[in-house]
Image (cartoon, rainbow over all chains, first blue to last red; front, side):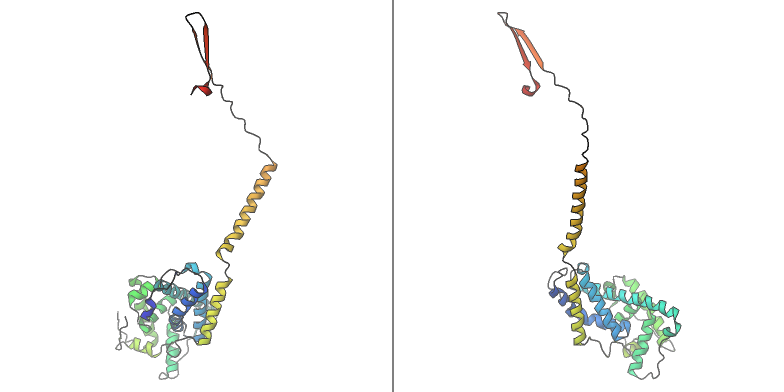
Length: 183
Length: 111
């Protein structure tokens, strides 16, 4: 995550003027889209997630906390919650139609596209919160404490999700399951 | 913040298949469209005064109705206990030449 995001928000965050909302969008859309892309593994769904997150901010601007980092955390939580809602709906649908639930089988492990599809499919198997934690730590390189602040969790909870998530991913992605625990 | 554990095979595999590696940013057109929708959604929200105006007007109308109904059926006055008349104090004395003087001290004027 870019450190420039930590710059103080230029005006009262609760102000609902279009300029302020536009500034909120400009500041956070890139970061949210990258997270959504990793959370959903699908460009179209990622775009929908980002749009819905910002629409929620626009409809209920008073819920936005003051301060840039608090706003970033608020937006990330909304996005993760939206992922969770979609994941629950999909879980119901998959229970009804198990054919749709089958992950795509990689044809050529050397292909970058197949690698992305494989990782996306594996990440999709994790619960949204766990997926968010794994993505933020393993792909975005955030520290556990920072993830805890972003998602409103304790560091211990983050570490636990990270550990379980790694095991789940290793079982899916590493044939010989050679993952080693890392902080 | 970022630590590189390239020796971690799981991390290496995840990063090799990072779903955001090919398209980590919104296209400018998509960005503009989402921003426009967000600003339109914000503009659709009624201003805060308007949001309070409707319920306040309803409450005021209901109050007026209740008061109107109450005035049509006047409540009979509740009989109150009559105040006991304050007793006037009287001072009588006779002067040296035999005149009887009577002073009546009324409560309202005695303070």
